[in-house]
Length: 283
Image (cartoon, rainbow, N blue to C red; front, top):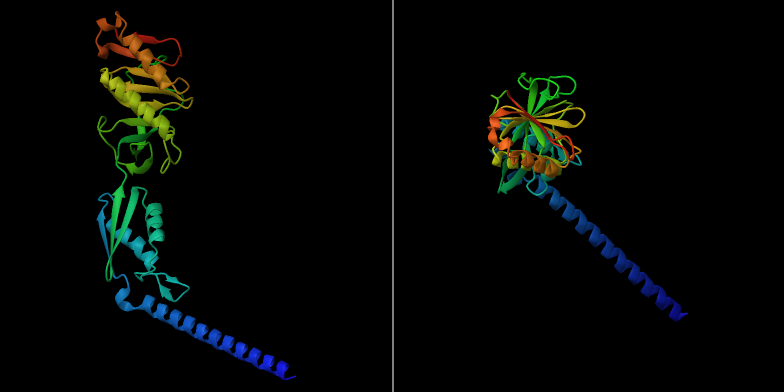
């Protein structure tokens, strides 16, 4: 009986000790939460100023407005997002990117105690993508190459083929111009990045051989018309590898008879066939 009573007393002591520990832990957690709460709301540690750098093609005032629209919110209704410790950096970067298509990259940097520095990196214009105003398929073999080829609204395209912003009207020749049917092209690509880079390499290789180009028309049937700076055109088909097309151009340029005429005498070089090349000279 004495033994049983002793075990009961020991059990009571353990339960009491455990309860005391639980109470202490709960008080500690509450004090920690209260401390964190006051730290996060401390006025001296709130973002009060936002500075924008670079991104000259974008309204800094609009970027600031977008940033403050994120910072003026609260977490669980009571914790301000302006706190240096929990400000929503990912949401700010994502929001700027979604709002401004010219933005390629955003860098955020905090300067204690209350400043946020934002650096904007823009996409760089490389070529233009313009609306083709001619319906149907443009085929210079079946029509005159001297006709004016009208285009509508244009967009900036970066060096990877990504369409990132609307563009004003430019005098022809300032930017190389791709044109074709247009269906909400902003934030899309002309082609896959790999094929766009192949096209640009093809253009460069032609330029190195004296055939500089100013624009490329993309037909609905995925045939292309490359317009040359000196007049004349080169016709391509997307199904024909560009390496094969270039070899076929070289075969024409290396033809002894072709070498007897200047490059500006070319009316067209037709590369839409795997094993045949057709070309015509201006009279």
